[in-house]
Image (cartoon, rainbow, N blue to C red; front, side):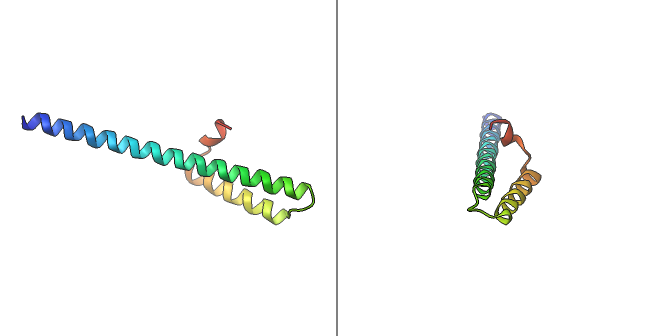
Length: 78
């Protein structure tokens, strides 16, 4: 009986770990998508004359930092 409970506990912990990983992935994808959206908005306002090149540069820098830390997987879904 003890072996069964140990296996069940291991499976539950494994499932919990996988669930946490998936949540982290989704949060990273959302953050990347938000940064991409901010870059697009900054570029658009710069081109329309109401934004600055610095804002576009800052948005690009933030996006590149996110990609360096978490990869560019979120770009494939865009």
